[in-house]
Image 1 (spheres, one colour):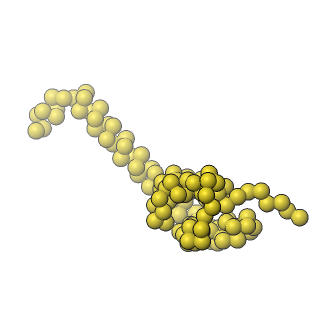
Image 2: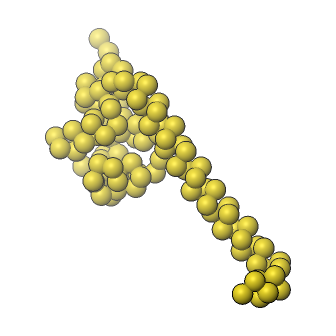
Image 3: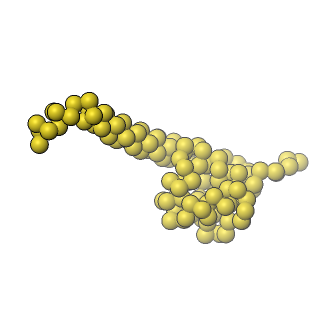
Length: 119
């Protein structure tokens, strides 16, 4: 007989890690405050049915896996992978924007005369 020691909080953390997103970004599409999700992950509180339902629907997770740790994590692995890739693309886009802003700042510091002439 298999002993189940992993908690729902640990399984939620696995979902979040799979998508490579922060607790804040994990919480947002479910309409949950990130602190509530953090408390569940840290096992400070137990999730209610609505919380579990939101995780299952938003992230295409098997309810059996989430509650009991049985079966596959995702109902549709292709959908999960598409969502993971989408999240990765968002992170890359944000990083690209930060890098562009840094380059613009450095250019303005290195070439202040060019900025004055352009104005």
